[in-house]
Figure: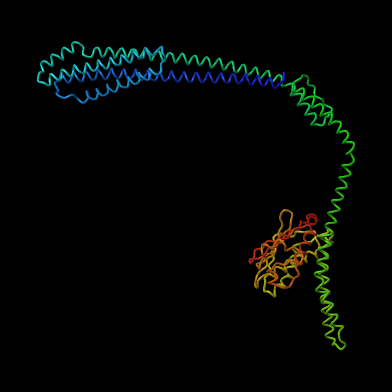
Length: 531
């Protein structure tokens, strides 16, 4: 039998048990509601019968006391009790009619008898009131002796005896009916409880039997399939599933075995074909990637270098050529004029030499081939000497250069010439773009295996949109060109190249109109410090 059929049969049985449980619950709730409604009405009738008995006795006592004492007016208590009794009778009639609508044909006759008895109570009650009214009428007409004689006769004859007997019968009947309805409700509840228990036991046993049966039939094929998939996932393509039968699991096992056969054959073919290909492709790919990366870096460096050379060498070469042509023009020039022209040529040649050296250093650093004379250097002492040179530059602008060393003797591995050039560039920029009588602060400290130098000024600052491009070659901020026409925009790129050549980092923070702070950090030379 297929598992689809087994599951369908199981679902049908569970549905049947669920529907029977729902039907039993619905019937139980309906019957309980009906019995509770009957019990509530019966208790209300009994309570009203008892109230009617008590109120009628109180009313007739009030009447007889009034007649015996000789009062001319009825007391307020009698009038009130009369209204209460009328209300009791009306409520009893309403409750009896409600109960009559609830009962079946077998009990309708008994409930109709209750309604007739209630009408009899009304008639007897009205007859008793009429007799008492007659006595009062005689007394009010000036015949008290006759009224007194009539009252004595009524009292001897039991003026409210019939009424009391009818009420007592009604109370007894209602009490019996309440007991019977409560007993029926108790029997119903006990029956519902037994039915629910039996149904729950049957449902639990049937469900357990079905679940156990299905689990026993499912456990073996599922375990076999799990072992097969686990073996296949671990790479054992020779594993086969042994499931017999004609159900869904047998078909699944056969499909699994066919898939394992196909995978095993394909794996053997692929392993032999791709054994060497992957290694060769990986080697060639890595070689091509490295070669392309190297070529791209070299090409970018070459393009940038030639562009910078062509742009920056034009001006000094033009000046040298112009001065040479002026010197050669004419025959009778004074010696002073020749000296002036030659000095201009030498000055531009020196400038050209510095420019070429800086461009070559930037280009070599971009290609990873910068040449440095590395040695262990006390960076604090070097910075102190550089700050002394910067004070000479700052004197002309009345800018104060202050230096503070917060660490001791910390060493770095670097080229002293290039490091001096680095700090001169940064201090020259800080002084150049500071306001008159400003201040440039230089401090050095160490943290987390680094030695950091911070140079701060209170100058013109750099616009936020131009801060990212300050380290590009021949790039100057707009306000820098307005503040100082000198400069080629090559100082900061050279500074960055020097820092990166020393495996350090350089950061710049600036706020327009408030100043700029440059932070340079180098790895500490721990080996040199220990020696």
